[in-house]
Structure formats: C-alpha cells, structure tokens
Length: 320
Image 1 (cartoon, rainbow, N blue to C red):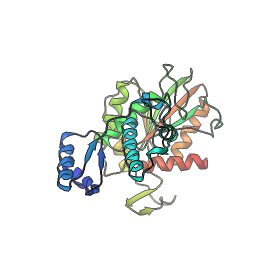
Image 2: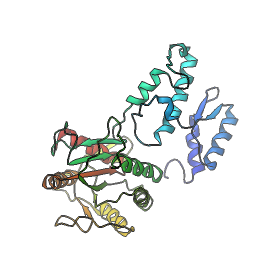
Image 3: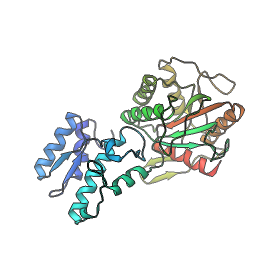
Image 4: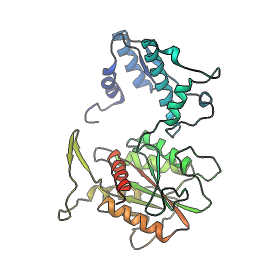
C-alpha cells in the first residue's frame, strides 16, 4: 500500500487514528495482527473498544437487508451498535418501539431493510434491450465496486447467490430467476495500484466454488480517470491514442488462470475474452449480443473498480 502501510499492522495503526479518548469505539472481528494493534492503541487512549458480532437475521422479523451479501450482516451489527450508543447519549432510547422480544426496534428494521448504496450489490436490468418494468430482461447488470481480494470474494458469493436458479426468492431489488438459459459475463477493470494477480484468481475461484463460470470476460478502461484524490481528468478524445496496455495485461492474467468452461466464440472475441477501447463500445456490444439472442439472459458482473461501476451507472442512466 502506498499511503497507509505495507503490512496489516501498519495499515491498522493508521486506521486507529480515528480513536479518541473518552469516545466509545466499535469494531468487527479482525485478524490477530490487526486486533492486537487496535487493542493496544485503545488501551493507550483509555478507549472502550468493543467487538461487535454479525446481526442475527431473525431479529429483522423476516425482512431482508436492503444491502445484499452475507457480509452486510456484519456491517448491520456494527451500525446497530453505533446507533444504540448515539441514541443513548442523546437520551432518545425511549423513542424506539419494539414489537416483539428478541427483535430490533421498528425504526432499525425499517432502516436496515430499506438501505441502499449504488454500485454495491446493485442489479439493473438494461432498459434498451427490455423495458425497465420487464422483470425478465435479456440483459442484466450486476454491479459491485469490489477492489480488494477480500471484497472480491464477497462480490463473487453475492453474484452467485443473486443469479442462482434453485428457487430461492430474491430480495426486493434482486432480479427474479427465470427458466431461460443464462450466460455469465464479466466486465472488469481495476486501478493500476491494484494487483490483478490477487483479485482475478479470488474472483474466479469463489465463483467456481459456487458452481458459477463465466462465458466471456470483457476488459475496458474507465471512462473517468482519477490520477489522485480530488483530481479528475477527462477521458481521451477520439483523436488521442488510447493506451490499452493495462487492459491487455488484465486479459493475459485472466487467460492464464485455470478455466473449466469454454466461452462463446465469435468474430468480436478472442477465445473467451475481449478488450474494448472504451466502455460505451463494450456496453454496445453487450446490448447487441443480447438483442440477437433474446432466448438467453445475459448476466453481466461489473466489478474491480468503483470508478468503473460509477461509469457504467452513468451510461445506463443516460441510455448511451
């Protein structure tokens, strides 16, 4: 890591800078290397550091979490602990209403079940191939801005669950499963500071463990390029030479991984992978492929970069 540190302990020491004397703090279970650093710093400051465990789904009274993915139950547990502490300090705990013993207050259940975060576990049927109201779209985008090996694993688990066909009922924002044949595609890019040798194998292995295989992988540059925090450079004009060396290296990493399935071959692809010089061209190709194969549902996982996910969201919103 360029800023926070080169080891988990170094990174944790930087993260622990948020601890303040006299202010209660919460964390979720951490690796021993990280937890020891947190506990040491909390002791030095006299901070009460409590470890929060995942939320028990039964406390939601059969309501699903608005944010999808099993890891979100850990985040929900942390959010509940923080909210309870703030309400207690403000003297507002008496405003909470609990219907049944062993469940959360109504306000908490409503908030957790309606929470949404664009680009994280988000499912969008493509409106240019089918109407937005068509729940059986031929082209569906599954967006998650995972960009670390750990979050890549969580992303793969979510994608496998969201696209399964075993009859499990999806959540309110999930695309219902269909009896049609489906194809899984990957639309990927990551920043050059990331290591694709760690990201892509984790993604592929986790998907394979869940019985999911990609027919085709597409690698594209982001529309927006962020050189540093707070700096936004415009995408290159049509006359500028587009450097695809990074995307070609991603394609090579993917191609060297052990695959147990063969992709769809056509004039636009190289085996089971393609590199596009722009995101709009990749989206256009996906739409045309879906339009030409209406009997198949194309399920496209977009991941690897929050910037890529944001660019896809803008393109889909503008129908470009």
